Amino acid sequence: MSTFTIDTSTSRATPSPVPGKRMTVPSIRSRKLVEGDGFRTEQPIVMLTAYTMRMAQLLDPHCDMLLVGDSLGQVIYGLPSTIPVTMEMMCAHGAAVVRGSWHALVAVDMPFGSYEASPEQAFASASRIMKETGCAAVKLEGGEAMAPTIEFLAHRGIPVIGHVGLTPQAVNVLGGYGARGREGAEASKIAADARAVDQAGAFCIVVEGVLEQIATDVARSVSAPIIGIGASAECDGQVLVTEDLLGLFERTPRFVKRYADLASEIGQAAAAYASEVRSRAFPTADQTYRPKS
Ligand code: KIV
Image 1: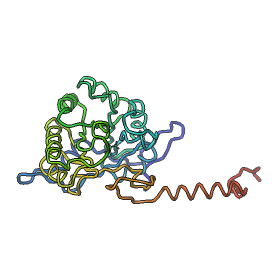
Image 2: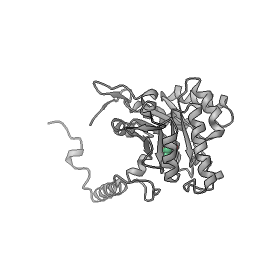
Image 3: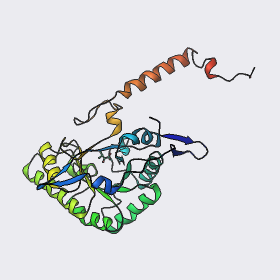
Image 4: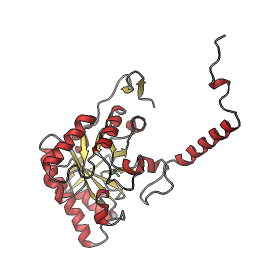
């Protein structure tokens, strides 16, 4: 399905003839309904990461939300973790994804160091991200400690996605990227974090890398939609790093399902091109300019 034409004079992705209306924060939030003494989401929320205009164009028709994740540090920039990711990176990629989409709600990760010091610092960073990218929401990592910041932002017009469980920006504290919640105290802490972020006003919450039962319990007991990654099929939605599901990396975490094997296809295409350049089989008459007859 083609949803865009590219205006090469401005390089902007222009919505196709009848653009739809973007998903909104209330439309995402309202997917989760009160049922009995718990909560239920009939239609799970589909979220994928995107960092570039073209990938956003391809993913947009299929997703409710596109996340410009700070995982771009590793995926795009080859950094060892998300910690060195800068505001400039997030703003540049966030703007590209907004330009490449018309349907999905675009959320941009707040990079490490841009929001933890105070609610005021978080407001300055989040408002910059929203102004420079046109995104509708920001995501930040942390549970109870970040609740006052989330409340501060939410009360000032900034929709926030929470992120609890395995929080990659805290890798140096956690000691690695292993699943969280194997011990009772940690399981209770993850649930308390989700509750705090929910009560602070996050409109949805990413729960990453936790034991399945913890994610299921959190999804059923917290009012904001829970978006799982390495969590549980009972979550209110799922998110994956797109490059992982496309099979662009040799190794992926256990919770990733590969839906394609693009690394092999790219390798084969590059090898065929290299071989044809070396044998002068490329370019042929079809790819060269000749005088018009
Ligand atoms: O940075 C990211 O891509 C994320 C998702 C994995 C949830 O935070």
